[in-house]
Length: 126
Image 1: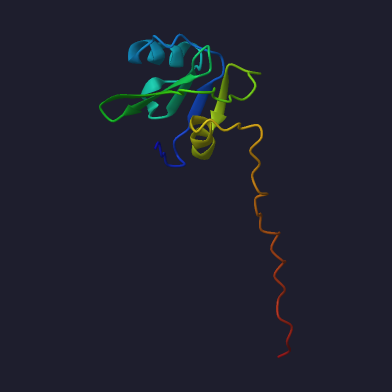
Image 2 (image 1 turned 90 degrees about the vertical axis):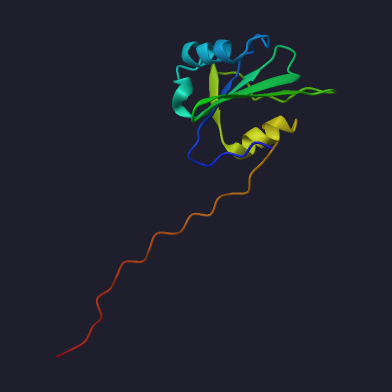
């Protein structure tokens, strides 16, 4: 479906917007609500009031791309709206667009290498 490289940031507008807005109206909301530049190539996700519609806006080299999804049954499960925007990764966006609840999805703990052992000079005589 939608696949973005890790360098692309994905911003979710947590409060509902008017789904009648098209590209220009959503680009204006990117400036006003999200305080971002819509021409960066980052991805901006907007939700409808009934939570059954999502629009995704992204600048692609020489023009905007608008992706629109409406669920025929059920609602999207959006994260709590504690702030006007929330940053997602591409995996979270995929889960969201599939209708899965991000709050219930649990990731496996990430592996972190332990601190390297200090180098010890070899002992030896001359």
